[in-house]
Length: 188
Length: 154
Image (tube, rainbow over all chains, first blue to last red; front, side, top):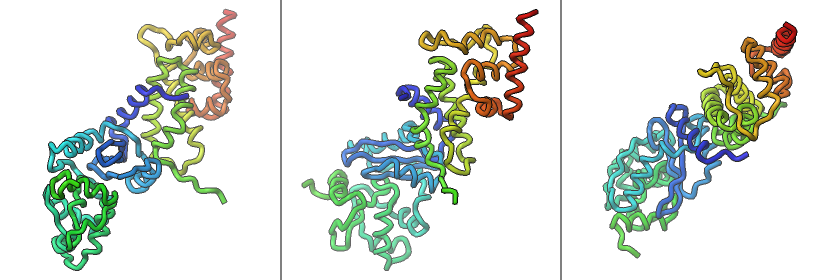
């Protein structure tokens, strides 16, 4: 038997409202494709490109606890801010972020990354220096690649020392799209 | 060696069992009351979920919680003294009739009689539902039946 949509939605809302979830997630449509957005009681913990929800739920359960449920309400604020960002009505995200998916050095680097302003670019080397390890440009590249919350923590604003876009976890096309949106690359 | 089955994310547990649970609740309670019981069932499951040690028998576990919730619903005295409503598609049903007949039994006996003779559940399941042993469930049902017989002959 299929559970009627309204009844299903009511349960998913109630589960979140009663504070019973380790992670609530939902799928969000954006100009750079569908994203999986996951939220804990501490904040936004993941944004994933090209989501595979079943596999991702397993991964989230392993890290945060087994009560992982698709539940739109807790992700509403993230969705709203993403919509505004893509409509060019928002430059900075104002969201609590749960960085438990990142490791220690990663957290330091991501904290520095968060300060790179809208419309500007920095380099892996510069970010490494700011994080206190000037020679760790390559490690910073790895941290960017594993950034649990791309777009919101703007790893798309980090480029190679020659200005080449270098790489992006979501693919270079998306990096280009985001930078064009922010006006730091001329539109193709 | 026993295979280690880990507890799946709640999402998967819910997707795999929600339809079955709703079907069972509708059989027991009727369409309307089943909706509230459905939500309560999965909220209870969610509260208990982190305490699960492994992922075996999750379907039976879900159905047991659903039965517990349904029985709580049946036991709960209604303000107007009526029984949980049953929609047309659910009646006429043996359990509806039994529920009328068993109105005056003590709650445990009533639940045992209704589940045994109205829903045809095995005593193991009734024991789960009542949170008692199988023997206690059997005793509750038979003393319920005795009480009904006695009342009829009075």
